[in-house]
Image (cartoon, rainbow, N blue to C red):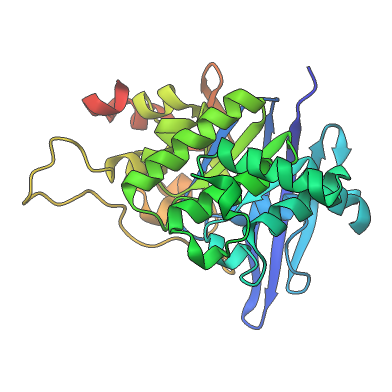
Length: 336
């Protein structure tokens, strides 16, 4: 079966006054239709930049896609002309951004914004587009959707604005939805509602979803597979249950260890990963994680590890995979 999306050796650079920022450094992964992929990592790991590069939304200058391919339905998006790429965005690949207030037009009504997308991408007339807008707003749980077509973004709560963004994203029935930290600015109750909404819509529409986040707790509720990114590369890739039960990379181990457990007492500190992410202008030689890694040896500082299979459909980039897996004990609630 041909993959819906195949990212191969993607590289992105930013030219700044301080030097060249190596934002994405040879990213590769594939997705089938209907997959839900989580991409996890700290700020600066390259997870959002890689997805914006796929959609050709990196500002040039200062950004530049310097290598790789992004094959969507066997078509390399990096080779399309701007007009062709505009056709793909919205109609076949849709995006939900972190802050809907910066993505929605504050001087256009919600109804006009969603209807306009369907008029442009689906060729509907205005009357039909507005009818479909009511339907899609109801589908994402906007109460009295027909009466809210004339409302502006500021008249909606944060959670409802994010539902509007989801409605706009799915209005043209895309094959792939990219959600770039869409719940970060929301409280935990609304986060859970948005995650459940996207999961339901994915099942009903059969679209693939890439969910970008720094929160493994959110990923556990939604994704089927996870790519853990660090310093612009994937350091571990696995289905969700093996990742939580048997992580193979020290960075993944640190992320899991920093999750609050149900048995955490009020006077107990959370675990954390010592140090800071690397300087992406001056990446260290060898493994990019070695300055923060408790498993490092001299070899780690000199040679960069490649993704290596540790089990069926599970790979990690570490020179000491056996040691990491030997000493990790999963928390009970993480393996349910």
